[in-house]
Amino acid sequence: MVSEVRAGTSGNYRLALTRLMAGPHGSEALALKQSEASYFMDDKLVAEALFGKDPADINHIKHHFELAHGIALKKALANLYLTDTQPSGSVFDAAGPSAVFGQACIRTLRADREVETIETLAALDGEALMRREKSMIRDVEELYRARKGDRRAGGADKHLDLDMLLETVMQRSSLYLAEVCRRFQERHGKQLPELVLAKDKARMIPGSYYPAALARSPLHVSFPSFFLT
Image 1 (cartoon, rainbow, N blue to C red):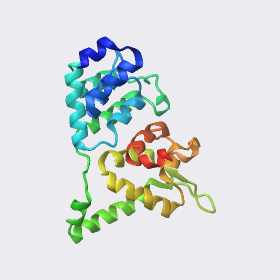
Image 2 (spheres, rainbow, N blue to C red):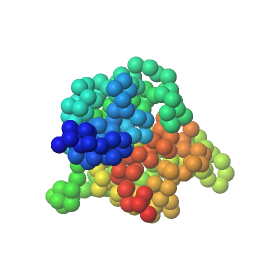
Image 3 (cartoon, rainbow, N blue to C red):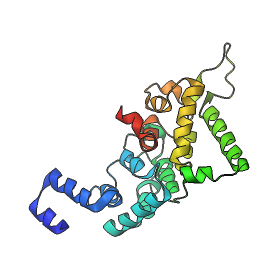
C-alpha cells in the first residue's frame, strides 16, 4: 500500500498520506529526518517529538526511527548536537551551545518519565501522597521565584526558571504537570503556559539554557488544551 501511495501521489499529499499510514510513532520517526543527508528539520520539531512523552511513546519512536533510518536515535542526536559545540543555527541559538539542547534530548531517551493514572494515584498510601504533595508545593514555588541576592526594596521581581521547568516536564507525569499548572495560577495569579510563551525576556532567569521557544514544546504536549483556545 505504501509503495502504491508513493507511486500515485506527489508533494505534500504524498507526505501526508505516508505519515498517516505510518501511525503516530512511525510518523514522528519519519518527520525527524529532513533528507538523506540531514536529520531533523529543526530543534523545535525534535523538542515536540521527544519532550512530554511517556516511556512507551519514547521507546516506540526510538524503534521506528531506527527501523526507518537505519541508525539509533541516540546516535543521530549525538552526531547532530554533541560533535560540534557551536550554535546549531536554529531558533535556540540564544540558549548557547547546541550541545546543551542535545544533552536534554538524549536525556529523554532514557524513557524513565513518571507515569500516573487515576487508578495508580488512588492506590497510593498516605505517606506517598504526602511526598507527592510536598514535591508539588515545592515545584510551584521554585518555578517562579525571585533570584537569589535580589534585595531591592519592596520585594524582588519573580522569574520563571526554565531550566527547572524542562527538567520537571521530562520527569513528571501529565497528571502531575496539569495539577502544577492549576496550582501555579492559584499561587502566582499567572498561567504557566502564558509565562512560557511571553516574549518578555526579563521574566526568564538570566543564564538559563532554555529560552521560551524550547519550553513551549513540552508545554504544548503537557497542556494541549491551552493551545486550542
